[in-house]
Length: 161
Length: 332
Image (tube, rainbow over all chains, first blue to last red):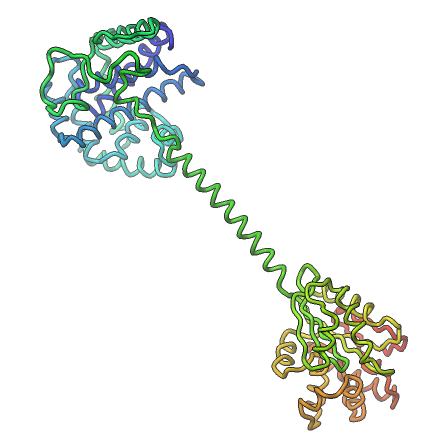
């Protein structure tokens, strides 16, 4: 298990990035759960990372997969997606990190595009990852990532206007 | 343009930060796990974090005020808290699977090519026609072995049966055939060797080997020539050996009324004599140089007179076929 300073450093450096990725998919309350799970998993992940870049990409990948799993589980239990999003938006739960208004709008716009390309667009446009990185993080061929991103940019622009 | 979109993303997400207490809570929880692990933990106190409402409880709306210890979070498990993230990703991610599939496909392709290659090399690419009286034909594949045999008359069958050349190398086959032919070789017999092969170098090689093998007593009784695939087909249609067929063809073209059966039943020697008697130039040519060689042959025939010299078919082919005469008289 990684030592405390290590985990603190990772949280200090990449906590925001992980948190934002969680907000991309989930309401704050669920995002919190996933956030914790991600860092617990990090703490238990003993294998060394090749670089800080690698570490961050790993954390984001785990976060995104976890969020998607939550959504899938919710779908399976017939909880509507809209219901989830609404919850987050209206702050149905104590205000530990409400999603800002602007974020909700963007997230809705991205959701209309579907996923993919939502994940790919976020990783490319906000986090600045290359298509190759994204392909490794999402398990999708690089060429496919390129097409999703180029198509997605246009669609997102339309959805936002 | 994209910058607009980017900027909006940035505006939206830049303001989102990890809630301070969340960071603390997470770190605390991790330390609790560490303690529990180190203690070789048997029990685990409920962490301060929330339960995973969506994954566990059907009523997704309610927030359970008294966090009970979720069943799955036993400290005896290695990763007790990671109900959501602990699902192992499939061992072979889509990309790795793709690589495996590609590698398998490449192997399969290589194997098929290999099999195809062997199959291709085993089929005949050249045909050797041998006519004396017995008329037979060998199909030679790229391994230089006999892949195919065919007899055009009874005697041919006999020879083939005796020699038993199927699968033998070219040279072995010729040696065996030569043995078997001895019975049919009269004093002045002519062995007509006809080579059908597109590859000039191979044709030359086949010819020299063929002549060498069959002309064992150096009497110069072996004629050699090259034929085209078209002629091969024609001969085969008429059910005649190539050597005989060509002479028959020339006789017919020169106006003689000889039937195919008659031609078939004659020996090469007889056919050649017949041709000479009627002043038919027995040109062993390939169709490209037909006229030139006919002309030269007729000259040569006249020059050589009535002598039944088989080299009266004076035909140094200038087409590059390494046509070799192994008797001295050269009429070039």
